Image 1 (cartoon, rainbow, N blue to C red):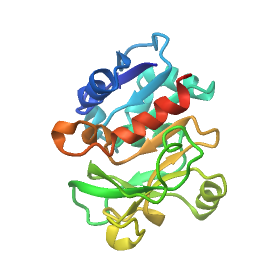
Image 2 (cartoon, helix red, strand yellow):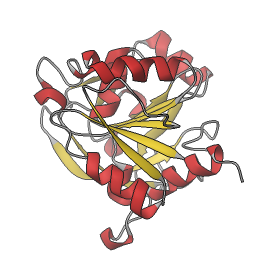
Image 3 (tube, rainbow, N blue to C red):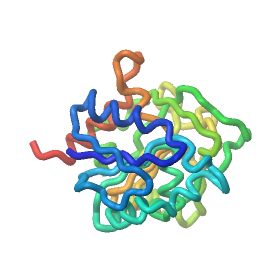
Length: 231
């Protein structure tokens, strides 16, 4: 597959994502600058983590107006696949490509640590090959990661199987003790109704290299490739 990784001023996980896609998964990758208006024929767009435009106003609020995002929105609305991680998830919610919002963590502090997440559905490319009963250890690093949506939206997310991941403990138990930021229903990631746009706060690209001692995150990328690349 040909991946495009969008780079905003303030992105700081862009090269982590590029390294995993290009060096570990052996995929073609192009860098997409925030002022670009050409997606260069990519099959899949990734919005990486960081602090786009310094997180002024609120996280992702300015990035949604960048020239590249007009093309990303068009790409997604035409069925193109998009993944937003951390700040990228925030941007996708700001644009309306994903439902809900990311609010300040309930402890009002920046949190950087390993957490566990559990797949909540197997109906999407990013979760199709994952074991729904297995907890995955994936790092988080955010100050505004508390997922929120109103009751009607939450019902729709549940009914349509749009919840990708929930925070859990090491034994796969979903409970508030395992919830690092106060996200409603322990939600760590969601998809849109057509299941081609994915957003998550944890960083799978930071858990994909054997040299880091954890490759749980690689399973998500492998699921994408298995689901979308013809055999």
